[in-house]
Image (cartoon, rainbow, N blue to C red; front, side, top):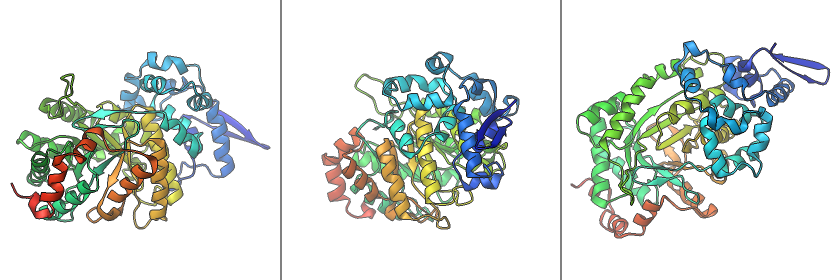
Length: 459
């Protein structure tokens, strides 16, 4: 029983998929902290050899978190699309890797395959990939979503304008919004992390962004990243809610630590759909992608809800939760939790590329908050490297934070200028609706008539 591999004169045995996936994972501090990491580089290579020979059908027969104990597992199993899986049903994990990197794996075939892959399959194949493999495979995949802007088109790079303020001061937020818009950020969303999570503050911030959007006819969407229950209360009280946000994770217990479950997320999804605030397309349809999710390797471990599963596999399982609700935006906040989970720039970069690849492979519109905390063994040079790698991999969007320094959340991210650098060096443009606005009279009025933040607050 179990899985086996021999390196030299040593035979390694892995008792189940959960152990094998953990041992085959490239080194990261969170798995060491959890006690699931390989004990040596040789054992890690042995795990990868054994994992390459595992048939993909094994992932349908054996669950890393028991079906009866976890609603995320039940979601994965119960929504698996056997017809979509059929083209690769005879593959091993190693054969899937080879196919993904071949010319046979076209953009159309990859899109059709997504519902047939489980998160554990995606996680497994990523563990066999080097950095260039993760980039090459992800670059083939485009996942396009729409609310007021169209995000994810080939040749485009969007940015979330993140104007956080430590006291939610309206003038300070307005200054950051003006700065970001004038530098071409905000086509993914103008999204504020509020300093305080309460309904009144959430409604005030939503109305601030919406009034600005309507005044200058800006094609974008707004979001205040309060808890989903706070956003629902604000929505029911008449606040102008565009996208509904929530942090999610890969196990039921980890999601419970965030104060959510699948039924609550379903309620939020349905509430957002009923508002019909998206832009009307030429064919009369309305932009219907209303959810915004953030994830990050290590969240289940930090909640003591990891079930002995490695953090990268659990991250991929969070994407099963996300894709259930057809989100507008998903991003991995890759280095935010800290060095206990991703120790240094090398581990952060690897994790960001894994997350982006796995999310897109599973059919999600992936962005990335290219970030680190100040006590990690990382710096802005490391983030420049990851940012550029993600750009070549076709990331949907990145963060735009004034000076790359979030003064409310107290971490380092990417700036408005970083988005400009990426667009210039890779020949990318903003979302088409936003790009047209940047060339319009609306943007000129913002630049000419709203040269001071105070003017943005005038009714």
